[in-house]
Amino acid sequence: MSGNPLPQEMLMNLDTIQSTDGYAGPRVVFDLSETHEDQWEDAAVAPFPLETVAAESLPEAVADWLNGDPKEGDPEVVAKWQSFAEEPGAQQYADFLNGLRNTVNSGNEGFQQGVANDLRQAAANPQLRAQYFQLALDANESCADRRTLTWNGMQTARLIANVENGLYDNNEGVAALVDLGRVMFRLEALGGIAREKVQSLRTGGTINNVDEIEVYLAYQASCASGWGC
Figure 1 (tube, rainbow, N blue to C red):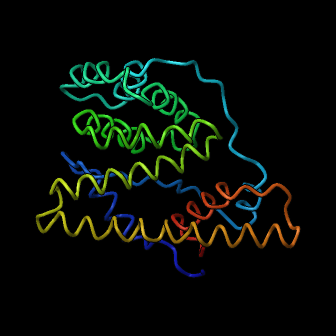
Figure 2 (figure 1 turned 90 degrees about the horizontal axis):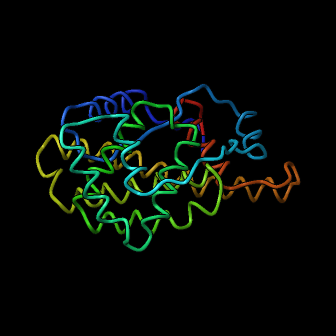
């Protein structure tokens, strides 16, 4: 697929939507640094380095992310997460939250706000929280790139939960949902393209030890920054 980056206008619309006070929808975060074809080939063999992160309890991990984007009522949110600490998958989700700090997006203010808003919403939504706990199980068994990919999956789960709860039922919500749907459709399509590229690289022997996840994330970053993916 070529000549089909995310339009700059769409990215600006998404940024405006996500920056609106009271926005409760999923937050789509891209690495907008300039990316070229030789860079994503390097990414296929050079994963983002992992750092050691001290284990924290679930409420501690939640509090750390909320402190980066403080809101009124956050102490009550942390107290709720304390009561979830014994639920199946709770500690794995805490480990996932800690591991997110090793991802390339962790220093992005919008990403930090997105994680904090996720935690506030999941505290009040048992179904969404259960999905997050389940998704975190596999993410912790791999690298930072796997955590980034899992984060994208959590944003999709959050979008579905918001649709089911009627948060997009007004005209403005429908417009926002259409833009988000287009982005998520393209990201899903990139998964198939990345798999084809990985197969091509493996068959041709161009690169050894090709990681499909790293190729996918490199395509995603390139698409967001305007390079034809």
